[in-house]
Image (cartoon, rainbow, N blue to C red; front, side):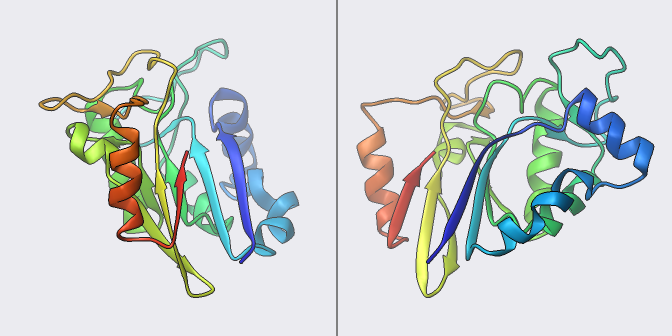
Length: 183
């Protein structure tokens, strides 16, 4: 099985402005489409919020990265299978935008991890199958969220790295997958 793993997919002000100007939400992926298509599985870190539940910032120096839900079409065009939102920007606009994005991604067939209504959800593994192998992914961040919170047992947020619980998370994911990627 061949896998492509990318780092930060940041559809913030600069990229968002180009997608809007070109009226093309596939724009960020067009030149790398062949490379992405060459893999059996594509994973990445979605370092922004894709939603219409928060206004797109107009200040080009903002660190709140938001784009329209149409950007999910670009992610599906690129073929992403598994995405984590556990980073310091995905929860910046708050609870409703984060949950909206995760629901929209899942609705388009992209599995998403690293965030949730509570810590249990945020730490839950996601699984995709490629070439007969089940690949599980867990999403965590070491960097404190810029604005949005880390998840707790009773509140929404992103999954923090916890070296005490990580082995248990990997074991739980291993029960569902042949390969486990803590991302």
